[in-house]
Amino acid sequence: MLKKRFEPVEGRNQEIIETVMNCSDVDSLPENIKFKIRLCVEEVEENILCYSGTTWVELGVWIDNSQLNIRFRDGGVEFNPLDNGEPDLEAPVEKRQIGGLGILICKKMMSEIVYTYKDRSNSLLMKLNLNA
Image (cartoon, rainbow, N blue to C red; front, side):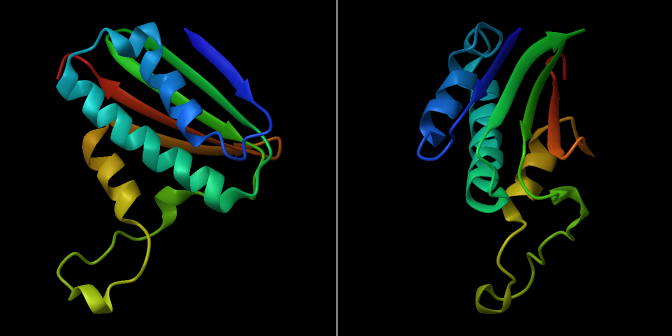
């Protein structure tokens, strides 16, 4: 299990992403699975650093019962990305609303995503069934 806190977080996107990807629980997985993980981790991390206003991020990565778990916790403003409606992929590009596509990709690639807000911190847990 990996558990690490990054403080401050400004300018550390790549370091945080690489920490997940180099974790032994992730590094040993097949390349096609690692591709999904990297894409989703990049999306979540970019959203946290760009929009939450947080000064810290806690990261947890572990495998439990053939399920990879990746948890991001931050002290930013309360925001549940799962509450936003899905983007209209049928609308012409120039009429589409900005945002939502990244979390939609994460929803499609991960087995489950759970958001909670507790003790003034956001927690986003992504789960990936490794037996699927």
